[in-house]
Image (cartoon, rainbow, N blue to C red; front, side, top):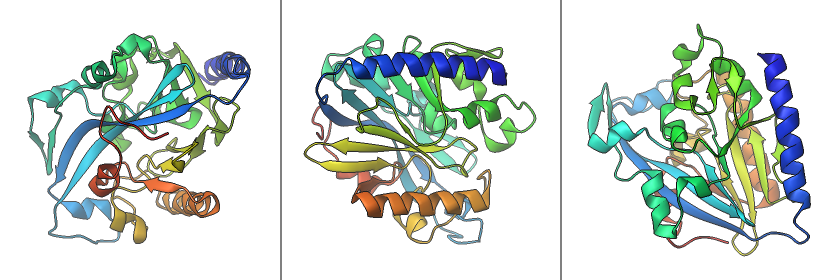
Length: 284
């Protein structure tokens, strides 16, 4: 598996480097927020392995972000699976629903699934990779550590890592249209989009730093935090892969935000996402 991962990384890196060099001037960068589901946490205490929030509930959102980089379209995270269109569905303490698919929302911009060049997934949980298989022609961008964790059939289910959500790109140990990234990577070599490695929630979790021309830098934090207080208290959900790594990644992301002056978007925090323009409007 590791030899396969290395081969695909090298090929994809060369392809993206060539694409980046084709831009003689800095490409335009735009970010759109997509509605990729809603969830009520009936038991908010699962967001703290130190015992906070007992007896509380909380409403969160599932958000995806469509990014236009020059002539290319990149989707950051792929939301809930289509089955939640039949929701709200109650599963344990979760009540989950999905109003529109990503493909349906793309129509508001005159786009189809085939127009999406890249899908970058912050991590492999069902609410971030649920509609990836709707984009079989796109190149998947994912941390190598996440794919390696996905291949561990004994450990992956313990951490809610679902390889079936990636069957359009990863199947039977074979990778198709996959770019593996290791750590913090400037995706196009122009400083506009950079993955930030944040292990802890899962082994290969990552965030995204965007440098928008007018709106300034933004950080899409994946699942480093789930809501504002979760961030302020640096809480670690009970199901996280590694407690210490989660805290270290949080410190790393906070240092980056302080250094760059970036606006933080906690992807599950309703307040953060309500501040973003509604489709078809965008930030640039």
